Structures are given as C-alpha cells and as structure tokens.
Length: 60
Image 1 (cartoon, rainbow, N blue to C red):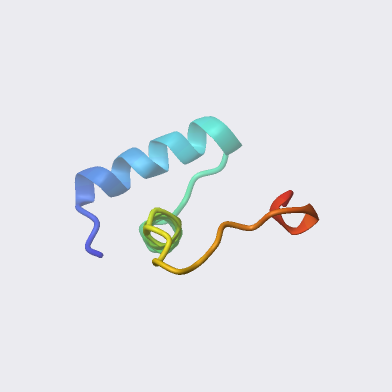
Image 2 (image 1 turned 120 degrees about the vertical axis):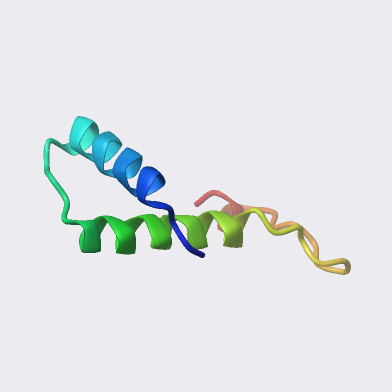
C-alpha cells in the first residue's frame, strides 16, 4: 500500500510525540507500511465455518 508524503509526515510526528525519537523517511515508511499491513490483516472477517477461539487460547 502506498503511503503519501503527508501521511508519512503525520506518522513521523506522532512517533516523535509518543517515543521521543526522530525517524528517517525510510524507517517511517517501513514502520507505517507494516502497521497498515497488520491492521488490514486483523480487520478481515472470519471465514465461514471457522469458530471463534474459546478457552485459554482466546486469552492472548
């Protein structure tokens, strides 16, 4: 997924506010891309026929 320069700059500002560290454009682009990939992965619907986890394995 392509991240615009404005979005990248916003990510860098938020990261700086939260962690007190500056990121290069390359670092920020990789981190933001990984975050977006993760969010897309966990926001997918559960396929039909798959039961949600019950019990201790669900408590992670």
